Image (tube, rainbow, N blue to C red; front, top):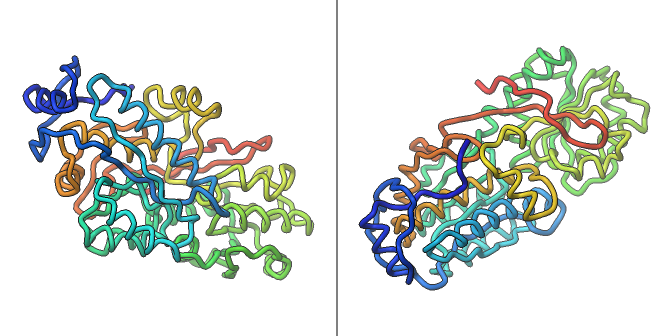
Length: 390
C-alpha cells in the first residue's frame, strides 16, 4: 500500500529548499536529486488544471479537478512544504477554447506545469502550444493515441490510450459477451470517433454497420430504427455520457431491450450522467470500458481521503488526476521550480502512484496499462471485470 506522504529530496537539497521556504527539516526519506538544484521556493508558484469545469461534460472534469485539489492540499499541509497554488483553466470541453486558454497558461509565468488537457480534442490544440513553450502537461484522461505521436517532449499521460481500450472493448464484446453483430456509433469528436474507429477495425466482420451522430444531438430515432433494421445484438457508442445516455434511453423506449441489444460505451460515458440521461431503468445493464482502475483497486488511503474531503467516493479519473498532480508536486518538492527543470524531472519519474507505477516512455506513454469493464447495476456504475489490454 502506498503512503500519500510524499518523499522529500536528499538531505542537502531538502535543507536548502526548506530553509528557503522558511521552515526546518522534517523526517521524510530521500527520494532522488532535484534536477535544478534550486534553492528558492517562489512565491505564488502554481500548477494548472486544464479541462472542463462547466459545460456538457463537466462531470468528468470536476472529478479530475477534485483529485488534483486533494493532491495540492495534502502537499501544502506537509511540514516545510513549498506552498503551491492551483490555477484552473475551464475549457468547457470545447477545443475551440483551447488555443486561448493555452496561451493564458504560457503567459502566466508562475504556472510551471499542467494537469491536462483533460480531453483529446482540446489536447490536440493546446499541446503544441505547451510544447513550444516548454510547459510539461500530464493528462489524466485524454486517450487518443495520436497525441503521443507528434514529437511533443512536454506530453505525458498516466493511463493507457485508446490503442489499448479499443481492441479490449472489441474483445469484450465478441469474446466475453459473445456478440456477433455490433452496430458502432460515434459522436464525431476527436475522442469518440478515434476510439470507435479502433473498435471497428478490431471487430472485423462482427461490425454490422457504422453510424455517426453529433455532439449536442438529442433525437436518435433514425439511428435507433437503423439499429433495429440491422438485427444488431449489441451497440458500441464512442463518445460522452450526455449523448450516450439519450441514445440508450431511446433504444430502450423503442423496445430494444438489454437482452436483445447490449449497450457498450467508453470512459467518456463512465459517469453518473449516463444514468441520469438514460433513466435508471433504461441504463440498467449498460456497460462501459475504461483504462482506469475501480476505487477498490486504488492503493493507499486515497479513497478515504477523497471521500472525507468531498463527501462522496472518487469517480472517473479522480485518482488519475491525483497521480498526475502528485508527479508535478513531487518535482516542486525536490527543487524543480522552473518549467525547464520540472519537465526534465517528469521525464525520469519512476515512483508508485495510487493507480499504478508512474513511469513514462520516450513518447510520454505510461509503462503500466489496465482496462476495465464496468456495468450499471441499481443505478450505480460498478466494476465488472478487468479485460485484456494487450
